Structure formats: structure tokens, C-alpha cells
Image 1 (cartoon, protein in one colour):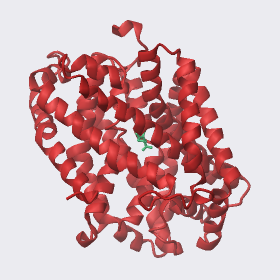
Image 2 (image 1 turned 90 degrees about the vertical axis):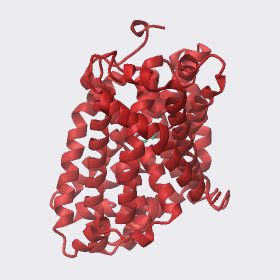
Image 3 (image 1 turned 45 degrees about the horizontal axis):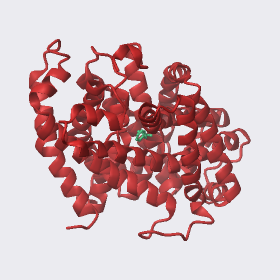
Image 4 (image 1 turned 135 degrees about the vertical axis):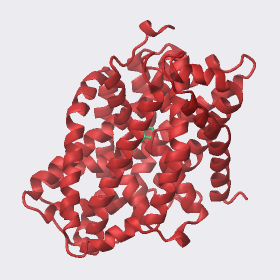
Length: 452
Ligand code: PHE
């Protein structure tokens, strides 16, 4: 299939926005603060930054490159770029397929909480700075099986209809206009949070590392977050890369997305942690942290209800961009490999996620005791995808590019056939994906899973 008969992004700016739309999502606003809080703060942040720069960025560059070189879905791409007899590389694509479904199963639940909070914000039900009340409101939402399922299905219906009718352009246009607004609201939140009495304890928590808190498990969580944040290791960037234009500068685009994504996470951290300490919330509260703290900061400012509502609406929109990119992985595989029309491929994917999503949605109620490795289904799906499948996919992509695909072809692809002068940069990226990234991912993975 050549470029013209395939769907694709139409402008260089469109590529940047769509890729950023995939990266920025609940990962920044929900996952990053919860994990940073639960894993001791600044030390975790430091490791996460290192993982993003030394592993995340290079993997993002080569994964996107493979997609553009092959112009196919995550499974077929490896059939095209791997040597004829090495058919097994396409299992990377199938692992990505599985990871996408697992992530969607719990991501849709968290997005559901965000949708619910839009209405709670409007109704003034979360206008409180009291940790006790805020905790009770959240617990009530998640512990009720019906409301948990209801909101998850709303999310699936919304994102499913968008991906099915292929109005991704509509969403792209919406995202493009609204994301700057989310950024501005985060800045306002930061200003308020930083001026609360007692805010400095939060900054200290976030920025002065205590190296003793960095255990192997913390390392693995930070690495998993770096993969999850940049949507890499599971064929998502590969699929998006297959829609990139021929003259797109991949290393520059990836670097911009990485920095923009990091800034959003840091802003979320600065909005949340000073308030956590100022109001006496528990930094290690886990998944509920954001849902209690953010409303508290808004409550402490004039016009709180309005801004709080707006904030949750924008977060819901951010989650849609990320979910569309997750859905695109299985949808592209099903439609390109099995000739399923886009509509049937989308419905099938949504159907599977709806089923897988049930145990995740009920993790605070009916399935809370259904534990595997001491984790309820929600935590298990999150752990398996971010901390196992994504790093594993990352290692395999690095080994493929570093040892099979090779430097000459990589240099040709990343320089757009010699149009860009980036040979030095490409050599650095090659060195990172050939040696540094696979070795460090392997060490962190084996150690973090207590396998050695
Ligand atoms: N990067 C997205 C976020 O942070 C989540 C995601 C993971 C999207 C993997 C696509 C693939 O919210």
C-alpha cells in the first residue's frame, strides 16, 4: 500500500498535535502525580526524568521511524521491515495489541471518574478542602458498581463513536483549540497552590530527592511511567508513525512532544503537591489523590466551581485524545489484516474493552478481593501493561533496530533520505537503542520483578 491510498496526517503541525494528543492524557494529570506521591516524591521524579531522556526518547524516535518506514499497522509493519525468515518480530505487534486492550480497560474507568467529576463539580459536590469529605465523595463513586460501570460505558460510547465515524479530524481540531486552555488552567492552579500557607513542604517533596527511597520496584514503576507517558513500547507510536508525512522530521517532533509532555506533568505536580501538604492530604493516597486535591485547590480560589468544572471537562477531552490513539492500535490491525471495515473493527475493539473493563471497573467493589499477585484487576491491568508489556516491547524494538535493522537504514530513514543533516544525532540515538536502552530496561525489569 502506498502513502496516497492510506489515511494520514495532512500537515506537519497536524502530526505534532496528534502525537501530543496521544502522549498527553490521564498519564500527566492522574498517573504521574499519584505515582510520584506513592513512591516518595523527588527521587521518583529524578529516575522518571532519566528514564524519559535516556530510554523513552530514543525508543519513541525509532518506533515512530519503523511505522513510517513500513506504513502499516503494528503487526504488519514488522513483516515488512524484518528479514523474510525472521517472522517472529511481529509478535511485538501482537504484544502491543494486548497491551492496548489492557490499558484501555482501566484507562476508560479513570476517564469515567473524570466525566463523573465534571457533573460533581457543577453541582458543587466536591467543593471542599477537607480530606475526609473529599475522600468520602470519591469512595462513594468508585465503590458503587453501577456508577463505576455506567461512567465507563459512557466513555466507551463517546470514544467508540468518534473512532468509528472517523471524525478524528474533528477531535484533532477540538484538541488543538482546547489543549492550550488546559495548560493555562494548570498554570492558574499552580499559582494558587504555590501561594497556600505551608506550600513549601510540597515543593520540597517534589524537588529534593531522598535517594534512599529509590528501590528496584520504584525504578520499574518510573520506567513503566516513562513508557506509558510517551505511548511507546506497544505499537501506538508505530501506528501513528505510519501516518506521518515523508518529510516529517521525526527526531525533532519526538523531542518536542517529550518536552511538552514533561511540562504538563510537572505543572500538574506543582499544582497538586503544595496543596497536598497545605490541606493535610495523604501524598501516598494513590489513584484517588488527584480527585481529592485538585478540587480542594479550586475551592480555595474565587470562581472555583466554574474553573473546576472547566478543568475536568478539559481533562476529559485530553483523555479522549489518548484513548483514540490506544484504540487505533487494534483497530488498524483488525482492519488492515483482516479486511474488517473501520466500523466493524472499532465495534469489535470497543466490545472487547467493555468486557475486559468490567472487572477493572468493579475493583473497588465486587472484584476487590479477586486478587492475582496481590493486586485487584484494576491494579493488575495497570501493572501488567505499564510495568511488563511496555518495557518488554521497548527492549524488543531496541534489539530489532539496534541489531537487525541497523545504522545505515536508520540513518537513511531518520534523515528523510539525506534531506536532513542529522548524522551525529542519529549515531547517538543508535548507540542508545543498541546498548544503553535494552540493557537498562532489562536490568530494571528483571530486578523490579524480583527475577534476579
Ligand atoms: N500517554 C497516554 C497518557 O499519558 C496514555 C497512553 C499510553 C496512550 C499508551 C497511548 C498508548 O495518558
